[in-house]
Length: 497
Ligand code: GLN
Image (cartoon, rainbow, N blue to C red; front, side):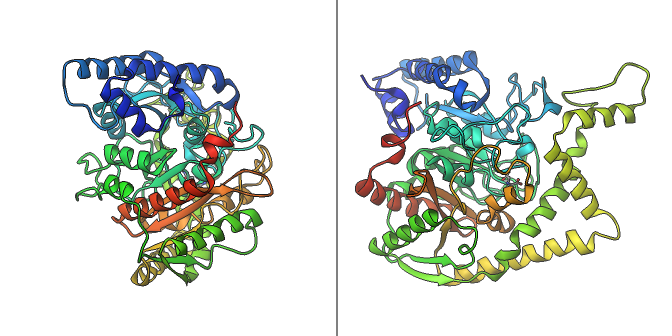
């Protein structure tokens, strides 16, 4: 009998459309898988069994009535707990929103529902998406399905771990500095940060508004493209949403080809701090691109070396402003409201109890960087560096079609190893941050296992803004070549939980 949890989203949708399996059957298989393995993985913060089965039943009814089904109708999905879901708790991995039940759906949530996608539940994440390991979640860490003693990446570790442990074939993440791509890399899955403004931020709890971008996570490039098409597109509820047609990502994913493509290898993404096995797999991927007909050149983007410093001023600055709304009056937690205290004191006590250490660190850092007298030296300088990084990309894309790099400098590190060392943690996003600062599109896809530890390595592909389709065209070609030569490690070598 077919194991329904091992299929791709595209295969699952086809089986449902043909009537080989009902959507309810598919949802039940995934809910059973969650029941069996999530105690060990802890990918989910909340399982919406009733909601999932009701959504699946609707798809089955539509099919029975002969109504047209969308390309992902009936396919289960794990939703990062940063998107509001009407009637279903949304915590952002924080105690400050414990018990908050949103009265409305995020645009992403609404589009998923309208497409007949079956939302299984909400996934674990670093508190307010601040982190690179999911260890900053107020609800405990998520484990990497490849090795339960290691991190699944962050901040969207729950979404990627759900995919890698076959609890869902699709997931949604958000990427402010790498939180879709970095978990994808260390779990052997695919993750895409669309062009900034490509996917609506309405109902997506804000961390750093000029960087935050929702996007698709999946086990294959085609599945990611199918999901991208469902969630992307203009939304009048988000003032930064791009009012232009969505790039033809599904068509690109079906027509993988790199012949004649000019590929730039970013020189600055190598050297000290990069694990040998990661560089080995990356070098082989570049060789593969050449064999497949791409023209590979080295490109220098000198300002990228300053990206981390600029990001860790801009992101905290924006978060210090965005998180001011958690004042104990509007949402979730309220501490000390016994009639004896002022509103200010209740706000302070609530924020003290509700925010974790990393969130407090960033609010303080951001408030400092924005304060008068320091603004020009810190926030102002960081914005100038941001412009230089954007110019580096512009110059690079004059001579190449895409850029490539490892997604992360190392494979998944042990849980606890960097927990008390914020600087070491921040380094995990070295290669992903420039694309957030510039707003262009980027993907991570698996490119093999590192020889020294047998853990997944991610290849990052970077495309200009609004050329998201290029990621899928290149990604699909690379994925097909990898699989015909080396099989699919996640299906064949991932430890069975
Ligand atoms: N790791 C980075 C941070 O902590 C990026 C997080 C993200 O993309 N949400 O800010």
